[in-house]
Length: 177
Image (cartoon, rainbow, N blue to C red):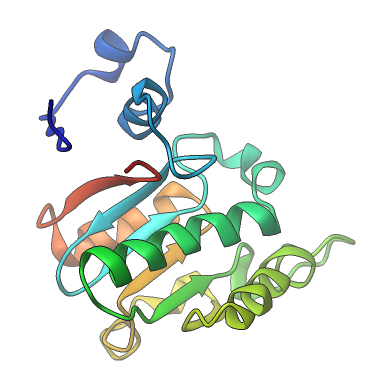
């Protein structure tokens, strides 16, 4: 028995057969032991890691799938990984959902969900700042100040990360022992 599972490139259509949205969810749901209520995708590089709150879902579904509780849970898993496994006290940046962290709709995710989650995490002694607008966050001067950047959806953090680091990273599924 092993505590480590390494996978190579796969065909999601063939291997996952539409039963799981991605390998993160497949590995998590196939695992018999879990330390979190949901899987957390962490794309890790020694210089910076990124993590989307929602993983492999349509963009139109993101606002329905984020919550204060899920954000807190995911960030606590990332914080635990850095503190207990890597022995680093992480500096975490949380991105907003809307352009410039503003919304003209009656429901503003930054005000109703993201900022309350940040406040909860600060009370738990997590070194977190935000919400930051995603369109200007990934400048060198900003990313040099943080260990990990958390976004609300997959491409919000993976696209700039892969642009900067290409494929020099590991995809780690957190929430498992």
